[in-house]
Length: 98
Image (cartoon, rainbow, N blue to C red; front, side, top):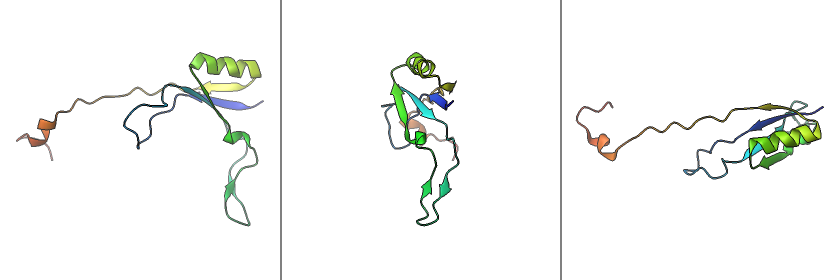
């Protein structure tokens, strides 16, 4: 029985918007550890399911897919975005902390 992880991806450091962060992702947990190949030194694993990444519109759709295909899953709660209000004028305050 395969083990999968269901989560909502976070935005990368290279993007300012939140594109592609509203979907839910199903990824298989690695069954074998990754090891360097002796000839070329590339990192490889024995299972190919580690390359599978499925995207769903909602968490319920992802859970329904796992239930339908008999996959053991764990759901990770999405991290909440913390917005710190800032003003440009705060850069020039007399008593700002440096």
